[in-house]
Image (cartoon, rainbow, N blue to C red; front, top):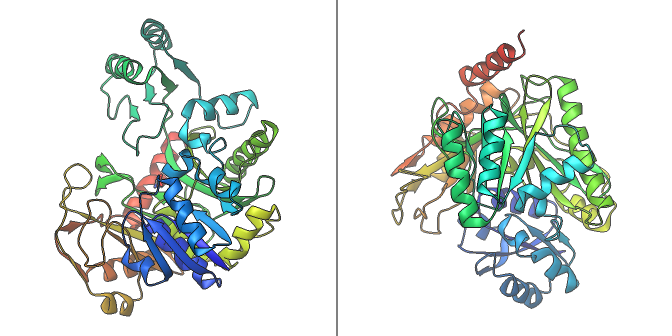
Length: 432
Ligand code: GLY
C-alpha cells in the first residue's frame, strides 16, 4: 500500500519507521529533507506542509492509497478535507474536528456543553473592561491563552511567565487588541502528563502514558520548548499516577470523542490529551489533534500492532486494537545551541550513527538536513528502550555522546532524580 506522510520532524521519523515496518511504501511531503525519513521513502517532495494544494498534487502524482498527517498546521488548513474530497482516506481529523487543538475556546466549550470530566473554569472575552473585572473578581491566579495555534509560545501562566494577575490583564488586553478575543482560565497546579489515543471516531484505543520535559534546561528551568525529551514506563502508566487517575483521564478522552460525534464533527486520528494531574483529578490543559513530539517517539517504536493496520482501522471505522511492548523508553532531543530563542543555524554537526546504534540507542532525525546541517529547531532524538527507565536512560545517554557540535540536550530527562522530584511534588500536593 502506498502511504503519503506529511511532515518531517522526529515525530514523523517515528511514524515513517512504523509505517514502513508494517509494509507501507512511503511517500513524503515536507518542508525539508529529513535524512532519517528520506532513507525510508520511495519518493520525497519538498513543499510547505500548509500548502495543501501542493501536497494534493504530490499525492495524485504518486497515486497514494492513504495519507497520514504528522503536524497540526496542515490540519488547520483543511488538508484532511481536501485529500478525502479527492478520494484519499487520511489519518487525521477534518479542519472542523481539529478545532479541538486549533481553537482553544471550541475545546473548552465542548467540554462544558457535554460536562466532560477534567474541565477547568474558563471564560472567553472580546471586551477589555469585562475581562479586567472578571480577573479582579476571580482573585486567584489565571492562565491567559490566545485562541489559535501559536507553536507553544502564546500561553502565559501567572506565577511562571506572568508575575501576577495585573500582568495577566495587560497581556490579555494585548491579545484582545491583536486577535479580537482571549481565553482566560483558572490556573491548576500539579504535574503534567501526556495521554495519546488512536480513534476512528467511535472506538478509543489508549497508548502508553508519557511525560514531556518542556523547559529548555536541566532542573525544569529556562524557556518553554517543543519538548526536550520524554519518558514512558514499562507498565504504560507513570510513577505518580494511580489506576483511578488513569481511568478518569481515559474517560475524558472517550467522552470528548463521543461529544464530537454528537456535534456532527466526528474526530478520527490521534487525540493527545495534555493533562495536569491536579490534587483532585486529571484536568485538560489542552488537546492536540496529532501525536506529541517527542511523545510519538516513546510509543511508536514499541508498538507491536502494525501501524498500517491501525491507520486502515482509523479511516475505515474498524479500529480494534493497538498492542505495545512492555518496555520503558527515554527520548532525549538534541537541539542547536541557543534554541528556542536564538538557535544556531546553518552549522554542520557530527553524528556517529554506527557508534550510537552500537550503544543500543535509536536515532530519529528532525530539524536537520541531509548534510547534517542544523535548521534551527530540535535536530535529532536519541532513544533508549529497555526493561526499566534507569536502563533506558543509560542507553540514551550513552548514544548521545556520539553526537558532537554546537548542540545541547537535557541530561535529566528520565533520570531517577527528576522522576522522584515529580513523585514528591505530587505527594505533597495530595497531602500524602
Ligand atoms: N511535546 C508537546 C507537543 O507535542 O505538543
